[in-house]
Amino acid sequence: MDNLFPLLFFLLGLIFGSFFNVIGLRVPHKQSFTYNRSICPKCKQQLSWYELIPVLSYIFQQGKCHNCKMTISPLYPSVELGTGLIFALCYVKTGLDLELVTAWLFVSLLVIIFVSDIKFMLIPNRILLFFFPLFVIARIIRPLDPWWSSITGMLAGVMIIAIIIVISRGGMGAGDMKLFGLLGIVLGFEKTLLTLFLSCVIGAIIGLILLLLEVIDRKQPVPFGPYIVIAAVIAYFQGDFLLNWYFHNLF
Ligand SMILES: [Zn+2]
Image 1 (cartoon, protein in one colour):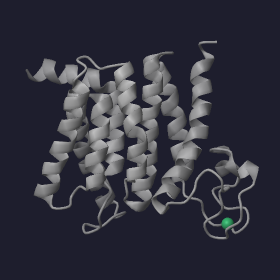
Image 2 (tube, rainbow, N blue to C red; image 1 turned 90 degrees about the horizontal axis):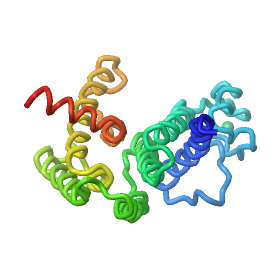
Image 3 (cartoon, helix red, strand yellow; image 1 turned 180 degrees about the vertical axis):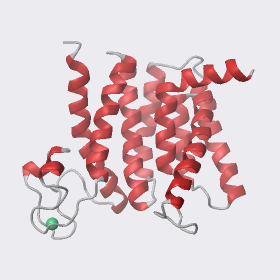
């Protein structure tokens, strides 16, 4: 049975991933995401049940709406697949433990932010406000060592980004600042700093690649949220390893 859990949680993640796509796309527009069935954004055709199956529907339809043949963004199946993999990885990291719930909540927030920031350059307050109390409760039930690392992590995240906002005059937004505050609660002080560092490195590398490939041009504003998301996932899963390596090799 134990061997089935990763597969089971992968499938669970696929389903949640398709739900997170919907939330990430609709919350910034203040649309309801619970009652309406999804529609094709071009021809407004309501999607039939088999078009709602994560990943597989995209493959079977060869990435096109079956009605109007509009190309469906590969972002959606990628997010579904990514969520499936990360949900399974959470189990591999924590086992059947209360921390598994925290891990799932944490990556759920990150996936939703990833979608809405890529699509709209927005980190919606409603999403942050939804997860904030959940993270606080999760860290009261299963505190970090030391417990106050959640508080220093949150403060450090908010204050450092606030300073960056002032210095860079708009390089980062208030959404990034609030997001870092939330990440700090779950990650604690050291891994929050690690996330900040990694997001800058990842942002610089991917930004440079996108510039060289001429996907973006120099003046185009780029959402920073996706880099924070990737960095936070690395910090959560491999933060101890990276921090140990850093302190052993450099001090
Ligand atoms: Zn269509």
